[in-house]
Length: 87
Image 1 (cartoon, rainbow, N blue to C red):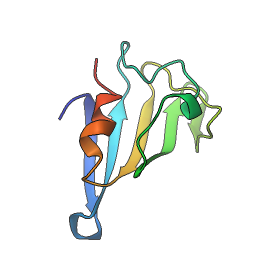
Image 2 (tube, one colour):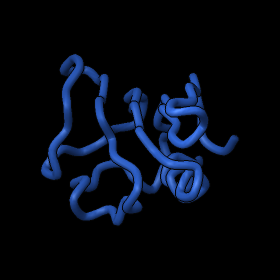
Image 3 (cartoon, rainbow, N blue to C red):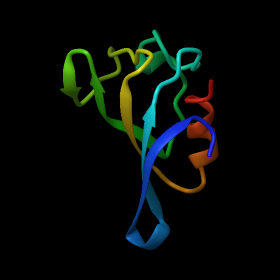
């Protein structure tokens, strides 16, 4: 898988997935408010772990290099989600 995937779990018999990424330095999602990055419909960032601890992000939060991000997604948009976490 592209990006630094730490773990993958299937849910609902493979109809959904939970992906954990470690955000690389040159990821296109970093340092932008989540509401402005164009994250695909059918996926949501459910948790972030960074220097400030663990949080459930809002659209005003920013992902920083080295953060761990938990994403809930469907197989249909999984590849688009992975593009946000490529180096």
